[in-house]
Image (cartoon, rainbow, N blue to C red):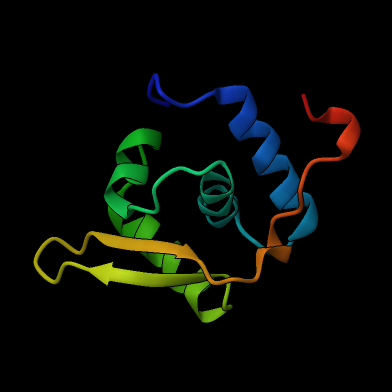
Length: 102
């Protein structure tokens, strides 16, 4: 992970998403966790930050889009860079319990 991302916060968000949506693979859960933390929905940036092949990120995004969990907002046909956001159904990423919030 790159320096601008708090690893502990990401792991906590990933745990919440994985617990709420055990049907998601770890990469898809990671994409939702990143959005939950307010990270930009950018497939290339996610791939670079986490050291994952861009094609795998695109495949996971496709599944999330089909499930209605993300909405693609822009796609560059040449580079395949895809920008995405939550589809409005934030129930897929539960908020942390009040006792764990700072």
